[in-house]
Image (tube, rainbow, N blue to C red; front, side, top):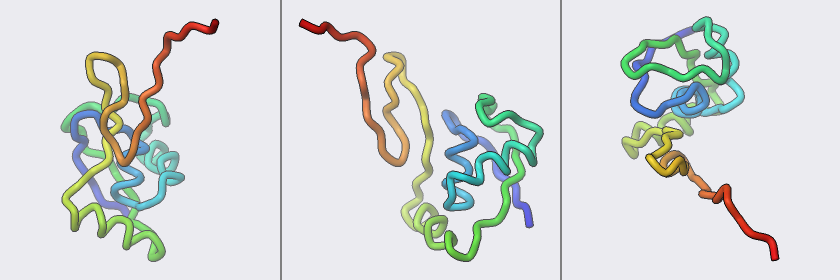
Length: 97
């Protein structure tokens, strides 16, 4: 069974998969169901089809609802990933001596 959701700022297909199915591996299924490539940028406000979470992953989805949080892989002006479930910031310039 499919449901729909509206894309928020900074969300990727991977974010949507984690938030609504509790399973990152379902991102490819979401892309396919919506005629998208896995790496496509999602437009804010677009509505996408999302499969229902499996029985095993319903708790993961419920945790997002309960805490009113959502994953979002968003970059700021510095290009560093600053939001999401968890993140690391790694510089792209370094000196070896």
